[in-house]
Length: 461
Image (cartoon, rainbow, N blue to C red; front, side):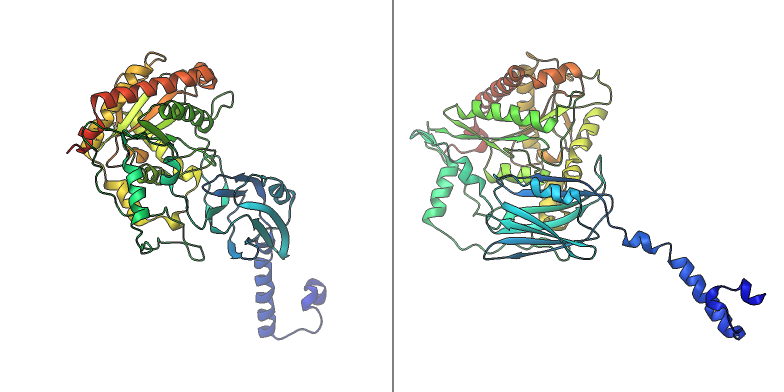
């Protein structure tokens, strides 16, 4: 009777009381552990895979239902990037990633996927050029679950000065940027490597924008007109779609179209040229947008967006400037919070953030910059109201991170409410995009006519 009631492992000759107690504890421990083991061994599920190729860098994103670890290393002859991802098995979604590599990708030639060892998948990227990779994970935010992000940067970062100087200045135009490059070429200097930013253990350092000596203030000959540089910043991009209208129109797409139209108008002027902080569908962190504008010594910074609200009846255009003393309205504060969250949605590698850059964004803003920004914003509102209703008749202010260039007048233009079906239809229209670009072009001209850059910058001798 005793043997029949005992577990098979305990049947047979009756053991001592001590042995029985030890075996019962062992069985109990096994019963406690067993239900947990299958969960630990279960592979993560890939929810989506995406690639964002661009000249500046290519991003590859794996969206998953749980957070995974990855290790990477690079090989030469030929150039390859190898990424080992723990907690994955080969799946149809991974095979789909192979097909998403585009022939025109500047960095990836092809991709191979294999089960390197149990529960570890290996991705091998055959590269078109050497890269400085960043591999990091993102927590769930907005509509995204866990994301494993692979950013492939060129080993030698592109210099925006070179790209912007493609427009040749006439002989009667003073061009500070051209003089800067000529001086660099005549007097090359050895630059010390910048301090390495903090990074997550096991990650490669983030490539930085190339540095050059800070140029002296431009000095133009009396009567010679100076070339003006306008930085245009199409909001969102890549992983961050921005607001989405009821018909599916994405903010990141429409604002890029408007920015390209405005760039063409600016470039057609004899004394102006435009520079886009992004010229394709990829993500640019907020502090990098500010860095780029300062790098090309922009005379004006215009961030272009399309508004959204919880009620589809909200409508009208708005212009915002930076504030040092809090937002001018609840809506302005809400708008700034929403736009400042772009880094979380788009996906910034926090392990590679330069602390000094973060400090600059936090506390470098000037009264003069804000006053000039308000003048620009007023000129824009006067022109935009001719083609669309204004949501607010005056320039609003709030703590927009993207407007914190301390030495550049900066405005953020909400062209319309993409969440309003009527205004979404307008934003989709090429003719209305042209009207918005022309209104901003006229606003730019009005501002510089009333505030000549030489007088504003103190360049006249």
